[in-house]
Amino acid sequence: MILWGTFVYFPVAHWIWGGGWLSNIGTLDFAGGLVVHETSGIGALVGALLLGKRKEPIILPSNLALVAVGTGLLWFGWFGFNGGSALGINQQAISAAFATTIAAFIGGMTWMFAEWILYKRPTSLGMFTGVIAGLATITPAAGFVDLGAAIIIGILGGIVCFVAVVYIKK
Image 1 (tube, rainbow, N blue to C red):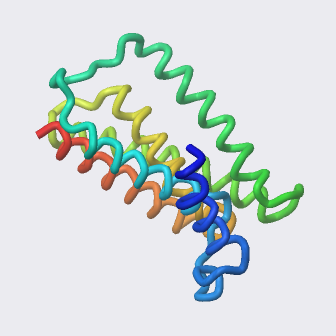
Image 2: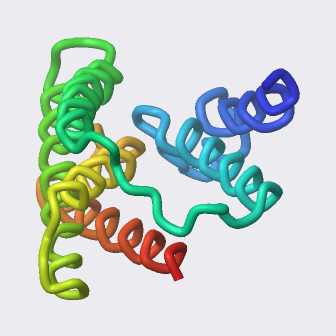
C-alpha cells in the first residue's frame, strides 16, 4: 500500500488536483473518479492479471437481500460524497447529487435491459451491479454535467461494465 500510494495515487492526485500537467491541459475530476477509481481499477487489474483465472467458474451471491441493502447504503453514501465534493450547500452540490442519482438509476436500468436482451431475463443482481457502475462512472463528472450528460454517462457505464463482465465469464 505504501508503494502504491507513493508511486501511483499521490502522483496522479497531484497531476489532476495539485496543479500538475493533467490539470494544466484541462482535465477535470470533480469527486475523485479519475484519481481514486481509475488508479484503484488499474491496480486491481494488475493484481488480477498476476493472480490469474479463478478456480471456481461462477461466483453466485450468497445473500441477495444483503446485496440490495449494500447497494442502497453505497448509493446513499455516494449521494452525499458526490454532493459534498462541492464543499458547500450550493447549486453545484445539488446538481452533483442529482446527476449521481440519475446516472446510478440509468446504469441499473441499462444493465437490466442488457441482461434481458442477452439472457432473456433481467435480474435484480444485475440491476444492483448496474447501479454501482453508474455511480462509479458519474463521479468524476458529477458536478460538471447536466441531466442529459448524466443519462449518457449512466448508459455508457452500464453497457461497458456489462460487456466487461460478459467477456470475463467467457
